[in-house]
Length: 294
Image (cartoon, one colour):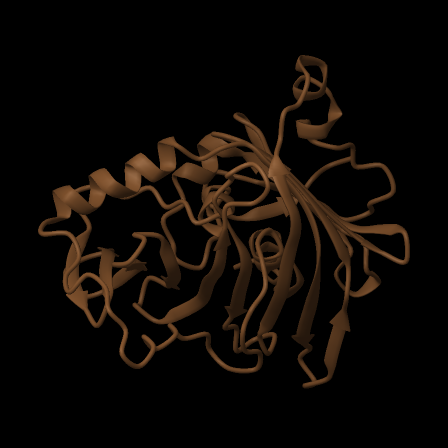
């Protein structure tokens, strides 16, 4: 089992990447379709059609840059409420390069990211200070719903990789696709809006089929350069050990990201050094983080 601080930091790693929410303090839910809504009365006719549509969106995702702000709210073991309000910077270069930072009063409070080989996140607030990183190949073998993989970063951008092993049902304006551990226990579930066929909600489950995290994506925007990303994303992490975590973020000034070759090969998408961090953890084969030797 991960140390409780490490578990919370893992959640922050994925959550802080995306966007705002519409409601805090309770589980995000899909918005009801407005009265008199007129739109498609059905989604895709088969899992093959759904997979093809979602893959097309994934393949067409453009590089993006954005700023913004977010509210990070969590409760400690004693039930005490904590809040931070970092300003954020996002740089995403598909398919696998991401940079995200959050500053508080002009000082970096967190940084996370990934490239083709590694992922990392480091957090400086005293109560959760630490540095976690790992090999993406090892992360790919972690199938527990409690584990937050680097791929979740893409999912926070409204991109989920699906295949024909997912099960499809249509209900009340949404195609609902579910991936199962086995026939009775879900691993991940997505809700795709019939009107634009964009993902509006993602649910994550543990190996017992219990919900561990809910992510809601809203207010998709084409931005100044026709970049389609969710400007608002809401995430609730359900953790009875720590009391839970809520992230409420808004992305602004969303634009096409056109980095130079030097920038792509430079420090922006490289794992940062561990200087200044006493607690450094590395992912190992059994999907656990262990202290890294000096």
